[in-house]
Image (cartoon, rainbow, N blue to C red; front, side, top):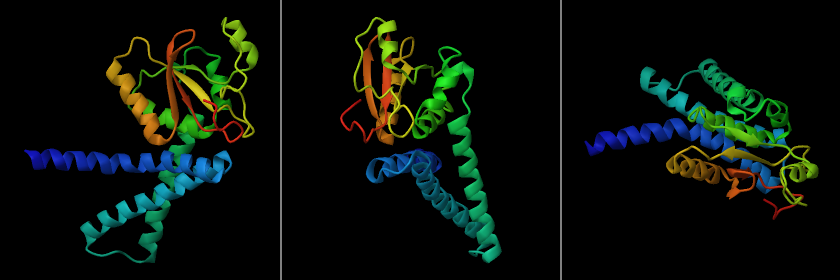
Length: 215
């Protein structure tokens, strides 16, 4: 029984690993090398393509008993690349209105850093009820909400041309789901803050090289 559970856990980890590599790799290239948004994502895509190529080669070897000729190697690489590229593009550019607090966020979300968008869309595949409550802001937005303006908010556009933060709803959700959500984003390399401004929510941010200490 223990061995069966171990095999199931191992399989799940193997299936999840490429998605972790994609996002964590992009965050690494952003944090450590200060690459532009899409170059950082391209770095994560490349790492993930290599991982999937290894997976496909392993399965091919198991089924055929050989590594394959140059043609089969090329096909494996192309399939891996297309899968990761299409997944990343879909995650960055497509969001359902069902995951938005209001229709205006549909436009605002395009002004959020692509790595952050990709990370949120990935977790939405597992948590269909996740709601984005806030994204890009300007200083006047805080006054409209009856809050003191924040000078260095990562909800503002940074030098990358994108906001580096968004908020997720935590109300009417179990603490287990909220805790798992927090740990997911921390594992991916993002900063998280659970706080109450206008409502209880989870603030997720990506490091800004303009304001390294801002959250």
